Length: 242
Image (cartoon, rainbow, N blue to C red; front, side, top):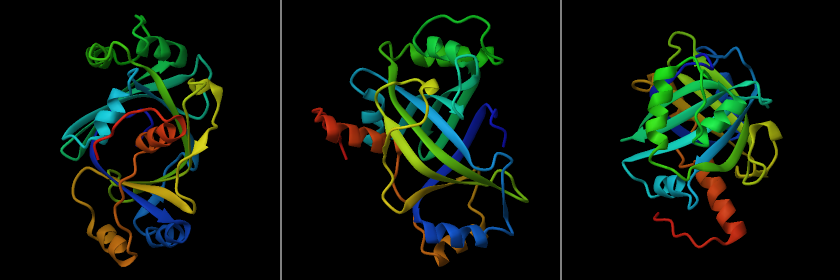
């Protein structure tokens, strides 16, 4: 899967696993999966939200439909490097992600509701993004999240993808991708986050492995956990419907 695949439609299931489970699992998936061409790499994100954190509060209320708006980079960019504007929607358990590339400087202007000309290879998607942005006139950078990722793809079916994220950090200040990777950790100690991303049914070999190793799905959203930690530290008076 290229970093520049512009559309995704798939199921994503998350698991919090120990490092022992990770080592055992890496050995067990060797006949079926291979490390992608990027190896271990840094992913950095700026999540956008409204003044009152509407998008993440809505997401945490467990609606049938939810969406997130973010800016993503692979590594730490400067203002002329290419980054990705993404809108991630989830409906009835299926994730739909659309994204397009822009230079960082233009992407920040675009998400700040400023007109940017000739900044992307995908004009149609920019128009789609504009229609989403009109719903959130006060959208602004809300949270930085970064993590180290290793991603594996299926040897026979590259639509099967397993990612492992470590060192998940967040911050709510200095909200630019160019500022670098630092912040507060939000993973439980001794754990890492695994995600299984598939377009159809889970392969039987993988379902069997998870069962044998007693690895079970976990509810873990990077943005939601960062938001909850932010609330705890800042005592903002929001009520989240669990």
